[in-house]
Length: 283
Image (cartoon, rainbow, N blue to C red; front, side):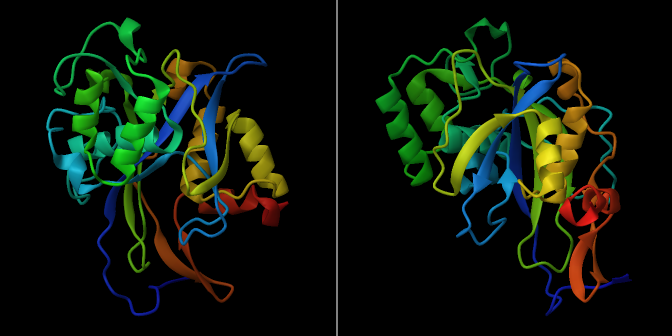
């Protein structure tokens, strides 16, 4: 293997983005959790056909009225000095809330006043005082960029439940690729009374699955996974409780590099060999 760059070698800034691990206790078996996943459409330019979690890039509107929206930071999640910018920024937290609402209808918020973050008991989490059609209209306004997420929460009389959003991992796409993302993974228990749906035009189906079952499906070729997704599933598979699943990764920030392997340029770094070996090509 030889370190390399993609054709052209142009520097493409990594876009700030958020990926949300929606979790619930496993319905069967001896403990553990289930995670909500979506299978992306084959027509998508990025990650076509892959099984992923809800999420997306930070939108300009995520900077408006969200200054205090900071996900619970993991103190022991290593953030090296050479990684620019704070990890769990307010716009990233806003993007996590907005994308989850847009893509699967789950609102990671609680009853509250103006859109400044509120802390307190979790008993109000998920109680939405508006009808499903009204929420549908808000989702449409968000996805069409007619409304920002802070304004949407104001309309609903809600506030972001930031102490229930746990920043657990961070992956940065290698230099040299045409699409690069600085992705923060945020884990959250699905709020009581809310059930995620497949509302995204980017995916063809959605499902709850135990992490070990998703890893088994990847091994047999039933599910296609990217390495960051696989890494989250492997970490979640080791969790016996929901609280354990909300703990941060121990690997620090992952920054793979591009290498040439068997005539192809591929991302490579810590865990890549295990990722490939555990997939259908390694069986």
